[in-house]
Length: 536
Image (tube, rainbow, N blue to C red; front, side, top):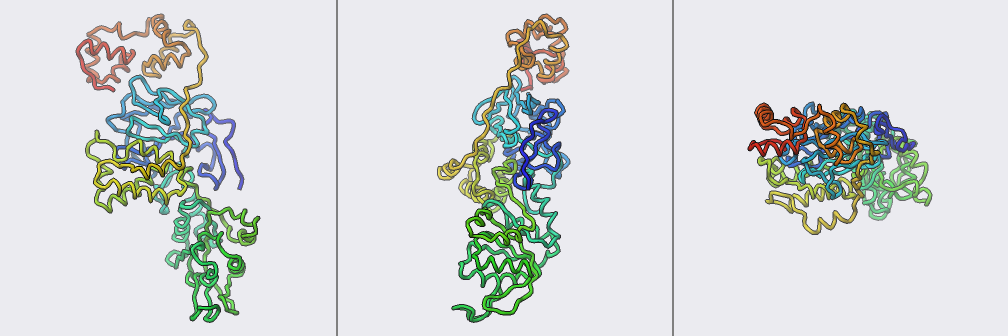
């Protein structure tokens, strides 16, 4: 398998062509132009929203994407419609995502907008490199929602629980593709992945979607069988073959006849078992321990390991021919830390199981939109930053402990022991960097058309407009005054403001768009007139 690093030339904004190792890394695309920035909800006050996604593909075309309380919609794979963030603590003033230089993504928050934090630091404008996007950037929004800014495929994924595996990351999509590609064939399969990544789940999916569905599926952990009994347990034994063999033993191979035999931790197989496995794979025959007559066997063999078998071969602990036979086709499972966009949905799935068991499933769908989220943003961020050395199995166990430990409480509480566990292995997260400096310009060089376009783009946020034009904030007023077609809030008449207030039903954002003046200055004039607004 070949490895491909991130390409140097990304078009149009440097984000569209990211390709990495096929099979070895979850961030794999069938073609480079599938890669787009995306936002995935990791946690939300309505906990069932976890896993919903918004593609920011318009950024690649040079257009800004504005995310606010009222839109756009976040959707799930397989669902045609979605919902906006729709939390009362999220402002109507949008969080704006745009293309920066050299493939970066810029994030900025309009004046008076929602509080956004990155790695514990409050930000109003920052940018992230394509490498940081590939790793994923956690965003704390209003102290209530956690989103992951990352790279995703433009292709629409299958429903997240397809083949029994939840998630929509590129890594888990790739695993599903492997399963469907290999399920109806008879070649041996070697599944590689760290402990707890779901290797047996993949083996079961291969079995269930192949022609042996409905026949035996036998799972054997070679690491749990005493070495002196491994051969007899796998291949069977005749009575009297060894001390204590008082009767014939069938063995797992014959028990799985016509079906699938899954050998987990195959790297732990003793040398004599490796020789016998190689013979079965080459001839389709086995010899029971103590037997002299070969027995035909019809078994689909799937093996799995979390070991580096190539190192075992160099150390003389594993036979190279056996590895070649076992890996007729390889499937590599991504660790959880490389598919962090799936973490929220996995946590939701495990939490729902535990909450239903204790009769508290209502925690996931609170009726009060102003209530504190059941999964606090601070805890969701800790889950997101944790490296999960035990992967999905560890996530499931920790979720169970959190749910049971918070039984009867309106909010999940993290006890000191679990808090300490989450500090043992932490993934480094990006630090927000300010946007690349714009070369300073003379205010006299800015045309009225350019000024008006910048003001409209940034919704009359004067600081962001000044940054975009490359002039000091103090100069923006002078530039506005030099262009008589661009008004200031102070020049509006009371009648004009009152009429607009009535037409827009007090919506401050709508008034700003209609009157095309600074939001802060307009709000000040509105208050002077004794009017109220419903904008953020």
